[in-house]
Length: 115
Length: 114
Picture (cartoon, rainbow over the protein chains, first blue to last red):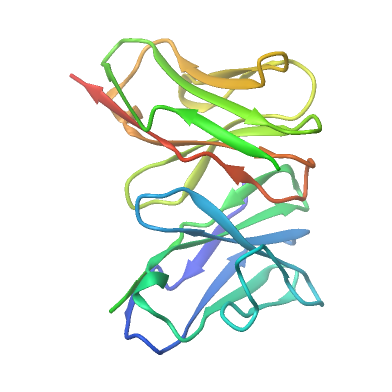
């Protein structure tokens, strides 16, 4: 299976600041996704990270709040901008494609607390 | 719109007993279906998946699930629960097949009693 890493694994941030989360895969993949898991809740897709073009955002999520980059087929970043306590969540990236067909594999997640 | 319903936010079983976690979905097209497990403070691990073919799929750790199109269900079972199975389980559907987003159920926390 894919080895997927995320940095940082956790962070505590002050409101009004921004945090960039990195997702790195050990081989090239077609698709990369970013999900949010709010405390005690299920996962919700934020956006699909498209290599070489702008990310595709789900309803309720906007680029100004969650800018995403995907410079190549193994790396993506998600920035949580102008944070508020409501942004406290686990943020997970997932990957699909390449040698990992038909299935999304998830990174370990980034646990974010906003004070 | 596609949706996933997991019946029971909490399920408690005794060690050695049958585990049954229920999942129903709605989808206008034949979906891909998944079960993931999340242990405390960890990411999601794939248990098993159904894409096409045999409707009874076997996964890791002795779990299996059966896709029943007529019932729009994909229930997860394990004949004998182990203490290490205690975790949160998520059913997910990919309505448009590979390369598309997953829609997750609310999750079921499984507790295993000794």
